[in-house]
Structure formats: structure tokens, C-alpha cells
Image (cartoon, rainbow, N blue to C red; front, side):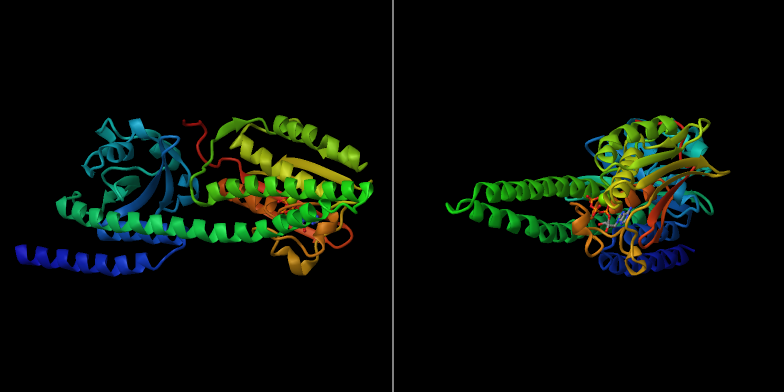
Amino acid sequence: MAERKLEALLVRYLKLLELSRDLSSTLDLNTLLGHLVHAAANLSHAEAASILLYDEPKNLLYFEATTTLDTPQMRGLVVPVDSSLAGWVLTHRSPVIISDTQSDPRHFGLIAQETNVVTTSLLGVPLITKDKVIGVLEAINKLEGAFNHDDQELLMALGSQAAVAIENARLFQQSDMIAELIHELRTPLTSLQAGATLISRPEIHKEQRSLIVDTMQNEIRRLINLTSDFLDLARMESGRSHLELNQTDIKQLLDECIVLIHGELNLKGQHLQLEIPDNIPMITVDRDKLKQVIENLLTNASKYTHKGGSITLEAKTTAHDLLIRIEDTGTGIPAEYVSHIFEKFYRVPGTENSGIGTGLGLSICKRIIDMHNGRIEVESQMGEGSSFTISIPLHNTRSQPVS
Ligand SMILES: Nc1ncnc2c1ncn2[C@@H]1O[C@H](COP(=O)(O)OP(=O)(O)OP(=O)(O)O)[C@@H](O)[C@H]1O
Ligand SMILES: [Mg+2]
């Protein structure tokens, strides 16, 4: 009997070894986390597994990956450090086995309420790399019997591999993005350098001088926008930024966006048509981030529409979703380029003539809408205009903010 047990354990360790090799070769963070949670559930013979990552500045944990079908609902869900099992594992830097989760005072019951995942037993291990705790790996509901010491040892071993792999993937992601940023910085910097050289020449006329100064100021503005947009995106992509969900009055939020775009529209003599009913229900979203999305789309609509054109802002709810549509009578996007516009730094060729930009606006929008488990879609006709539609599930995540 003891021999059989030993053999079974050996098989599990071999599986772990095989998994570790797989983990160290995956540098895409999402894929990696997906593999990890499945490996954790598999190794510990559990019904499900989750990874919670630690946001140090805000001192909270949030779900980043789970094996359950409820993944979209759980992703980004925040768990307080001081009143949850995962928080206990994090602060004590030690594993925990709970056979009756519901009666343990450290269990954070809200998660079960909100996600319909009933946790009966749990095994949690800290993810530690270079003496830093970066999160918690949890196996939930042992399929047969109770979690035991062997399960804990195996999950600890997987956890230490996982922590290193997560750190590597994060670093890789950052270095990749930094390479892209540096590439993008070169154009405005070269143009600033040229401007500075020209302006220092004595034979330059006054008018020419002011033209150069204008160009330089534009480039500087571009640099400032580029760096702040880039930081926003980098924070979201590295998982250091997550949603702060609040019950939000959508009509009021749209009104605020309209006030912000008003000046731009006036300047170009563009007409804004509103189709916003009064009865939009309160919806749980990250208010500031959604506002950023709508502002970005309205700014694009104005920027890529000629003077005197018209822009429509429509909002409505269907049985399951909130829909917000921003339509313009602008230049349109050639069909062959549409699939690229959500890529980082992508601008349709020839766009420079329509106005300055970094090509990050829509990537940020898409990222934010993804975080809300929503969709963003575009329809465009050359010379006639474009229409961007956002849809966000009405009953998306939790109904109460956690902080
Ligand atoms: N409403 C629109 N009409 C026509 N083309 C558009 C529209 N919105 C976006 N585009 C095209 O998609 C590209 C990407 O848009 P995105 O908002 O990401 O970048 P941007 O507007 O160039 O710069 P910024 O980062 O300042 O927003 C734009 O450069 C433009 O070519
Ligand atoms: Mg834009």
C-alpha cells in the first residue's frame, strides 16, 4: 500500500518536472497563467485552481486566472488582504490547507456569492521569487478526500517555478514594450533636434522661426501624450492596473464626456447628435476608465472628420448589455487597415495629415473594454464615416466596490 502511494507520488513529481519545462519556455503572461492554473488543479487533484496576484501599492490581491468557466467574471476581482484566506497566505508567506472553508473566519465569502463558486476545501501556497511575494496559487475543492501534505509539497514546488516564470514573463513583456516605445520616441526626438538646429541659424526669418517653434511644440505635445499613454497601457498590460468598479450613472458620465469634447467640436464646426435615453440603469464599471474610452473615441471621431461634419453619440441597453456607439461622417478607414487599428502605435497611413496622435488611443480603449469583459467593434466606409460600438455586460462583475 505504502509502495503504491509512493509510486503515485513519483508519477505526480514527474508530471511536475514536465510542466516546469513547459512553464519556463512560455513568455506570454496570459498563456502562462492559464497553463499554471490547469497544472495546479491537475497536480493536486482539485476541482479548480486560481492565481491571485498582489498589487503592492494598493495592498490588495486580484484574481488573474482561474480554471473555472466563470473566468471572465472572476478576472480582476479584488480580494482584500486582511480578510481573506489568500491574504493570510500572502502575509504569512506560508501555505494553508483548509478542509472546511465556509467555517474558517479567514474565508472571503463575497467571492462565492458573486461568482457561484462554492469553495468547500482549499489549498493555498504563496508565490515567492527573490524573497518577494508576488501572489497566491490556490487549489479549490479536492476531488476525493482532503488536501494533504503531499498535495501541499507539490503545489509549493509548482508555486516556486510559477513565481519565477511569472516574473520572467512580466520582464519580457516590459522589455518588448520598451523597445517599441524607444522606437516611437525617435521620430519626435529627431524632429526636435532638427528644429533646434534650424532655429539657431542666424539667417532664419521671424516667420520661419515661429513656424519651427510651432512644429517643435507639437512634437513636444506628442512626446508628452506618448509617454503618458504608454504608461497607462504598460500598467494595464503588466497586470499592475485593474478595475475599480463602481455603480455608475452612465448618462451623467456621457454628459461629462460631452462637456470635455465641446471645445474641440466648436473649433471644427462639427455637430454633435445625442441619442441617450434617460432611463439607462446604474451599471457597474470602472468609471474613470470607461470615461477615458469614450473620450478617446469622441476625440478620434472629431479628429478624423472634416470641418462641419457630424458626430453621433448613442447609448442604450439590451437584455444583457450596455451599448455605446460613436459614429462620425469622417474620412473612414480603408478596409485593409481596419484589422490593425487596435494595435499599439498603429496609425492608418496618411493619418498624420488629420492631426497629431500616438496610435495608442484605441489600444488603450480595447484593453479597458476587455477588462470589463466587453467588446469593441468598428464599421467603416471610406469617405462616409466610421462607427465604433462598445458593449459591456450589464451584470458583469461584482455589484459592490471593494477597496
Ligand atoms: N473615427 C475614425 N475615423 C477614421 N480613422 C480613425 C478613427 N479612429 C481611429 N482611426 C484610425 O485609427 C488609428 C488609430 O487610432 P488611435 O486612436 O489608436 O490613435 P491616434 O488617434 O492616431 O493617436 P492617439 O493615441 O493620440 O489616440 C488612427 O491613427 C486613425 O488612422
Ligand atoms: Mg486617437
